[in-house]
Image (cartoon, rainbow, N blue to C red):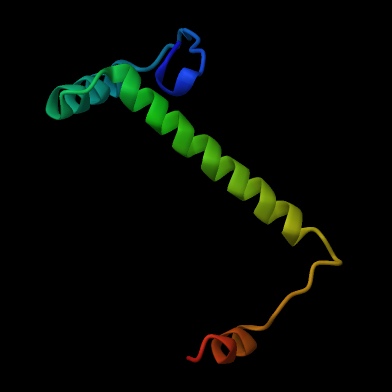
Length: 78
């Protein structure tokens, strides 16, 4: 078990030597484990990917209401 009671899973990945060195440097500078930085990077990537999927779905949804730039500026008082 890990923090918050969630189970953890061990993953094995291959990265370039250059990327591994950068990760090692960041881990040393921050005094945090490499796995900490990998987990945070993966969490951020997955959140951004989910946001991208939502944006693409909305972009392709012809029933989704849109607003012009001019109307948006008026709406927020610019």
